Amino acid sequence: MGRAAELLAGVTLPRGVEVSAIDALTVPSRAMSLADVLQLVERVETLAAEAQPPDGVVISQGTDTLEETAYLFALMCGARLPVVLTGAMRPGAIAGSDGPANLAAAIAVAAQAEAAVLGPLLVFGDEIHAARWVTKVHTSRPAAFASPGAGPVGIVGEGRVRLWGAPAGPVLGRPRGLPHRVELLTMASGDDGRLAEAAGGYADGLVVAGMGGGHVPPAAARVLETLARRMPVVLASRCAAGPVLTNTYRGEGAESDLIAQGLLPVGNLQPLKARLRLIVGLGLGLAPAAIFPVD
Image: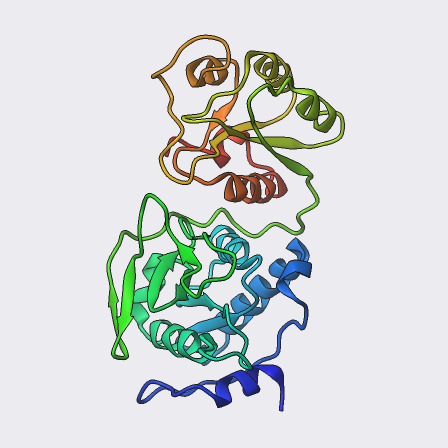
């Protein structure tokens, strides 16, 4: 019996739902590469293109990089069926294991055809989250995932799926590979831009997690403005919720100054996901302004 079949053995399936188990990858989530996720996307698109495609797909993996896998699916997967991701915070040998309940809820969501219009979803603790917003917010609690600034797009209760929320944005596309190097830099008090300058010597692009509404110290701002003339430099916020501002504060290092110097604001997109979006966009040969349109 494969690992996927073992996971299903402890799950009470929704009435009328049949599930086929596939062992796609056998690596811990901390070791998953971008190429591994690309392989999963290709696998799902192949299933969706079969003469008798499944009604939906559930992917179960470790939680370390679960949000990244979900967002990469949102960027690259063109399959027109529900794609639902889940996992567990408590292993099966520990009292109160949440794996079977999460998997059962994910299967219930994947069986709903209307879930497809919301794009890839992450189901955890009976909450349904859009890949665009979800993030891991706690290291060990069962309620480890949330969507700061947005909230869930649905819930699962008593085996019933209740969906709300707007449809996901368009897929960027699936590149042939993901070779571009993009560094993620978090700004802090007193940052003089040395790390950004060093990264600019080898990276294909930078994502800057600025303070507050998208601010950096003046010394760092001067370095970033220089780098923005020769590579994509994306401006996000290190805050858990709220968009990058565009025209509220002025002066060296403020968001309006940085944007005027060529940095690209990402709106509400989290820095971690802005990095993935830039990597995929560069892999497709898109212009930076097309990768990050006005949110």
